[in-house]
Length: 289
Image (tube, rainbow, N blue to C red; front, top):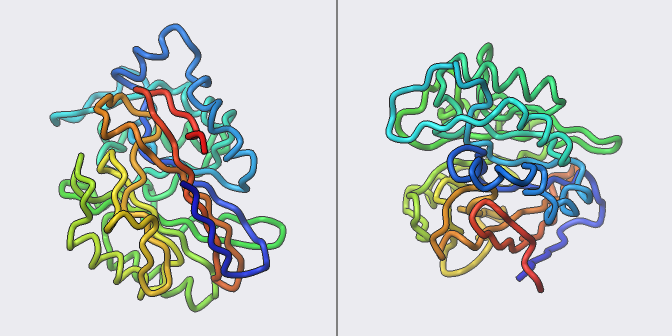
């Protein structure tokens, strides 16, 4: 089911969000005989029709020699993934999540370097500056700010955005300047379709602080309140969880996912649509109407 609501006649920048993605474990096995680029073919039209395309890159990109952090699940994807993502039309990679530092600071630095070398801008992490700083995405006629935060325990806040106070500061500044702000959130309970009270309360605060739209992930399933997608808080759309994009989970409840396409303009009015996706292991396609 696709939902499209027009709030303003002026078309500005168009941004598409995809959910959790990594290229390790079962994804690596599943693409052993087929190019990784094949994973993106079915959703190519969504990126082609957008000015900017984001995914939550839930893995470092680095060589196997970069030491892994000791934790229950530690992911690593090959450096070549950066150019594959670029060639598939991705312009930004969200790094505010609980796996971007699975290979420590060295792995994060290598990931950022590979992405930037490929022309992809990281959002929500930094080895040198404020990880919560907004990333400006500009077209000839419009600008939009992209921000990302991880609301989970154990995040290294020096390098990955996990500080709501910092985020509030940036949102206030963007609101004063009249710049639309789209916020990605890595949050919630894995495998739970239910939205927690903490999620709802934080979403309400972020909307009050000036976020134009919120797009969530981490649960690996589609999350909603009473089946409403997106929820509307203070007039702002909130996708609590859009599920996986490229991931090696096969449970039936993880098959459904969403992409979110948002059109924005300098007046902070936006339009949006939710696109249903269907996953089969790491393979994903746009659902038939």
